[in-house]
Amino acid sequence: MEQRLYTAAGRRLLESGETPWQAYPRPRLRRDSFLNLNGRWQFAVSAGEAPPAVFDREILVPFCPESALSGVGERCPEGSFLFYRRAFSLPAGFVKDRVLLHLDGADYRLDCFLNGAFAGSHTGGYEGATFDVTGALAPGENELLVRVRDDLSDLAQPRGKQTKTPGGMWYTPVSGLWQPVWLESVPRRYIRRLKITCDLERAVVDTGDEELCGLVTVEDPDGPFTAPLERGRAVLRPARPRRWSPEEPFLYPIAIEAGEDRATSYFALRTITVEDTPGGPRLCLNGVPRFFHGVLDQGYWSDGLFTPADPACYRQDILAMKARGFNTLRKHIKVEPPLFYHACDELGMLVFQDMVSNGDYRYLRDTVLPNLGFQTRRDDSGMHPDPAARAAFLAGMAATVAALESHPCVVMWTIFNEGWGQFCSTDAYRALKALDPSRPVNTVSGWFRGGETDLDSRHVYFGPWDLWPGDKPLLLNEFGGLCLAEAGHLFRPDKRYGYGVCESRQALERAVLELYEKRVAPLVDRGLCGAVYTQLSDVEEEINGLVTCDRAVEKLPAAPLRTLAARLAARFAAAAGG
Image (cartoon, rainbow, N blue to C red; front, side, top):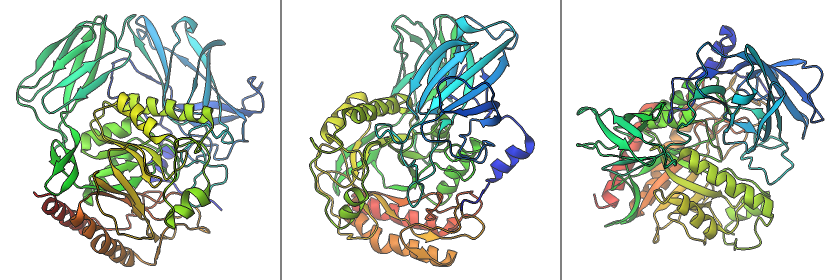
């Protein structure tokens, strides 16, 4: 039986009655024009494509109907159509030349209508859709209708940890709108995208539009400077470059003038490379070997599921992990809203980004046998054979790279996790490197290795621990998962899942520290480059988090974990020849 657990932010939101998610939703390309359409919408569920005659409920956008914060709080029938409707009026002076409607995340197939006119469609649950609705706008009040269909029986659909039968390491599915909905107005010719590529000396701003010209102004502590935007590109060279790192996450704000369009953004100077060192191959930040001390981050919340009550909750999680000495989050089989990555950029948290899995998962093949040592399997033909599923996965991968490639916090891509949906890994590696040659690619995390990759990535929960580096940097990309049940903070009090049980916070602290000291630290001496502990928070039945699913209880204190992090960093430096 599920128990409704609210985060402190969720309770504040419901008590205040305020419009949720009021922060500007796209910090990497920000304009003054912004109309937030989050809040209470009319809502209905139907078996057919036609809008129902009666909308019999309300829903709080941007929370999915399965979540408590939405006000609906129940699963929708499989394959049904979800209808959202609301009215809005544009403020005086809002319209420039064009009006764009943004739906930043809807799972999975979306159709949009404005004043009865078709505005556009989108397929994909983890990336946003933008429609030019200028021609459909009416003076005064406008009616927006959104139809979404989500069908988890379609194995081609990238779905991550969502399942029709939640339990264990599988979680409640998310349907419909789960990210902000908003409007902005732009001039006739405007910046449609902004790709920023950096090294340690310069940043290259690329709009992808060779007809755009203008000026970019950089806010440099040594004094602002400008660079021309020519043929849609600008090269920015600070006189005394400041590097971005977790210890000093320095960001350069920029303002872009392109014709009549005005926007702000930011960049950071940093590199992430694989280098040979005296102690073997290492993953290096800004040319310096670094131990990537991480936690697995599933991105689930007790009251909002995929969506926290407030984007400030991202900062709460990040700061809680930094206080414990962690410098890396592995964003696990989920792509977050832009405000998550912006918080990581600002606060200095490195991100290992997973792609979102799809296809056929089998417990025996993909979990049990590999944990018994059967970790070799060819993936060049027979694995994950459905061409539609392969195409959907690759499309989602390309969309993820396009959305996140300008964030300095993102330092690695992971394509496949534990064999789930794995196919032609060398081809996938090469496709991703063509999209983004600036970051290392972890082709296969866990097992079924064999194709091209930049890293050797292992998962160990039950042993053996005899890992030795080869010709690639070695990562322990999942381990741990020790459980502690905190009474009153359990999403499902009658069911508990994890990889080892502790009966008290003191016992959990001893077990976690012992696991690092006896198992992880010796691997660091051999050349291990990073370790990702499972996990940041409890997620539904899975109670192996460092904090509870409602973020109300921090199970482990900060001080001993911070001391542990310092010891690991020192051992890593010694092993790397530093």
